[in-house]
Image (cartoon, rainbow, N blue to C red):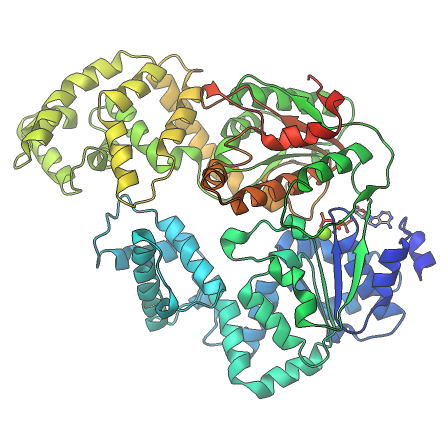
Length: 640
Ligand code: ATP
Ligand code: MG
């Protein structure tokens, strides 16, 4: 069989082959990136089906993303002897897709898709409603982060009563969690997390049913096991309890979802759970060139908490990772764009390239450059457009009111930045009618305010006039310093509303504003980009497209040419990890290093790291990870 496969261009190495043949009992395949873990998983399944004649119905293959599941199916199709009917009977999918189907099968009414809270805004609306019952400023509170926290608790099977809040923020969120659950249950609704919790409850309650599933699914395999969380591990353990034929595959160095509750100790302690575990280590990397592998190794071996593994490259190309040094975010985008264009002109496909970034906000300039270019691209990132971020929205509101002092939407945004209540909007509008003036001119006419507020408001019409005459960058600085925006950001930080890094966002905004000469220009550009961003965000399945994606989304995937954006301190590693590290906690920093490792090991032929000289308008410092890359071979410092 091993030979048959070689006709497909793959000849398994000894360790891979051993893993494929180990079909019974718990099996742990722990290995570095690109060593063929996913390949082994699919080959092993194909082997069991075609050589051992196991029934596809008794097998289940789980992975983390829909993209990975789709790719697995495609790979399975290529093995000799796998018919499409076999493939259709095989259960391959994500945790959610597989387990939701089971729930639907048993309790179709309760779990009808009509009752699914599948939109973020639906869930937000519920906790917003609950937030009115306690002292939360609805305009300012970070509801998105609250939902992430709630999801984290749910995935840990922590009920609202079991939460032990660490600070005011968690106290508030735990209240919202409790109310969210009550409201959801009253309306018979459920969210994605509930699917797993629901099945867990069902199988705990109904042992008869559990037995049936244990009978049916005799062979269970899980890819990317390092990112499994509590509820997932419990479900998998329950299903395998009879046969213990559980094959898990993963790499503790690629565990990057701690914030969602994933925990690499499940893979590292796998043997404690199943003492009879057979273990296979793969240490050949078949994906990346030799220099990329050794650089990535160099980075990851700096981590202290890890399972020591070796990784040797199979390919012999000697092209080292290339460093390049753009001046700022805008030049970074331009350099990458031009580099890719040149290669496409020389015959490369757009799909050969992936550009990876740590956070959406670090990719703003890049995304905008692609929007205005002719290279087909696909954006894989979570979150809203940069221009919809809270602090940015507020500053833009000032600029919009400078452009048009009767902009109603901008006025809404502005009132909270001026420490006014939302109802002030009505009063301002009324005053503007009564005095036949613009909204801005109406501000000093507001009644019943504190003297300090009155003083501020009475100055504003004049300030807005001054604002109009400024260049965009000067205008933003004026808003920060002279119009009270900095005070506002500070106050938000103090009040536990979690408007994090508002001032960073504004610095990003200033970097981009440098390229526009008037406020009018700047606002037109931003309007255009905001609309375009929403368009590209939902575009799927563009063929032969360059991938722009967060590192998190790139896990398990591979590309010929990879670029990593913004390899500077504060971006990768992220600021929050550096803060924790300064306070003596190096866990987040180690997770950042794993992210760097994941990013680097996506590359097959070439890897280019961008190290901008400035970031957010200030001098930037080369990422410590870049220093770790260079430590091995100092000659690798190349200029682009
Ligand atoms: P990751 O940790 O990133 O998920 P992985 O360990 O799952 O990586 P795969 O994606 O399975 O690695 O394999 C990496 C690449 O190497 C794939 O293109 C795969 O087809 C190829 N490959 C795996 N094993 C072999 C082999 N024995 N001979 C040739 N190519 C191989
Ligand atoms: Mg894989």
